[in-house]
Length: 120
Image (cartoon, rainbow, N blue to C red; front, side, top):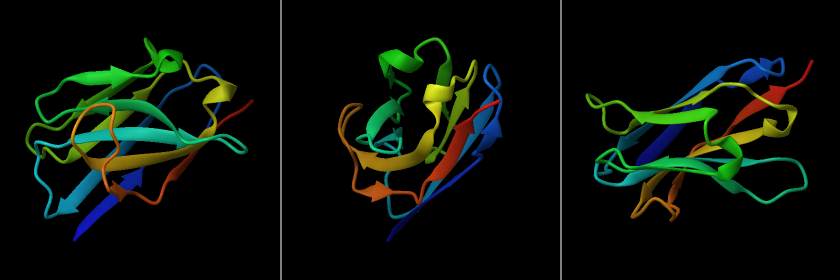
């Protein structure tokens, strides 16, 4: 069984930064991609950023240059999302996804989500 646990959400002012963490434990290979998705009220869940086991990355156009996804080489099923220059439109529940076969596909494992609110 695989467990996915996120942490690091919260309330931040526009222009501020937050760092999200995600750890996937259990029977999951480190070769699979992991990603961050978000869902704002009334909107569909969307891909924010993803990273493969070898370190290739993909970002949504709306976060390019502001968000950075990284993977812990010592703990390959741990990923981070550094979010800088946050905007009110980044407000959403952020979900970590694990077990994807590629950067643009969803894996079968999801975390419980962490709320990010950008507001003054």
